[in-house]
Image: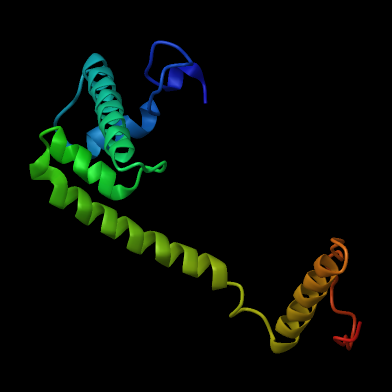
Length: 156
């Protein structure tokens, strides 16, 4: 990403992709409304500042609970502490929706090619995976992926 594609004072500053933020801003407004470039930059800077504020407070909440990883509940608590209680339900709903969409994507990606395999291909893949596991157990070497060339057995 080019330095001009993000809003910020220097490469070290945390920022957001300008094109993505401009798209989000335009999607939220009626089609006949235009936003001046400096107004877009100001909105983006406000978003960065908001993220910094919520992240910092989430870290404080996390530290008070003697945790080392910020969890979604820490962010929700931070929003409450910062006076954004009215947005908590909407943020939580968006988070739940994101979890559902992410799970669907992961499941589809993980198993999508399995349905396309023939029974022979699935058996060959299973045998290859067994061979790799055996190799790892017996000294760390992993056999290279081989294409089926006939009848393979599980014998070692």
